[in-house]
Length: 77
Image (cartoon, rainbow, N blue to C red; front, top):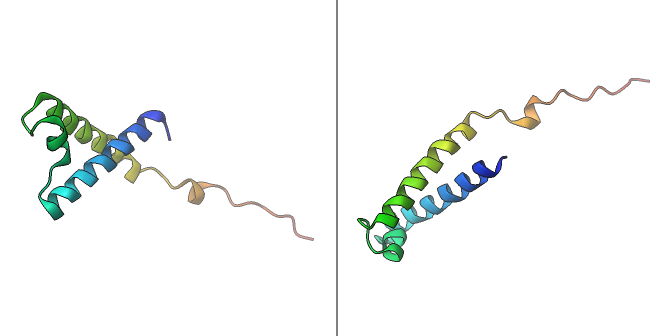
């Protein structure tokens, strides 16, 4: 996994936690920390989380490396 994918995954997790807080407690952590949903920094963070989600969309279609490996050929005796 590349560094960009790791950063995107971390941002996606942050976004998921924020949505969980909104859904369960009606509390928007990003808006609370950065001065409301309409503040420039909060909008930038929302945008970055959205882009990160799009980047991580590729993980759904990435082949599972364990399944793609050639089976080990063991010599028979």
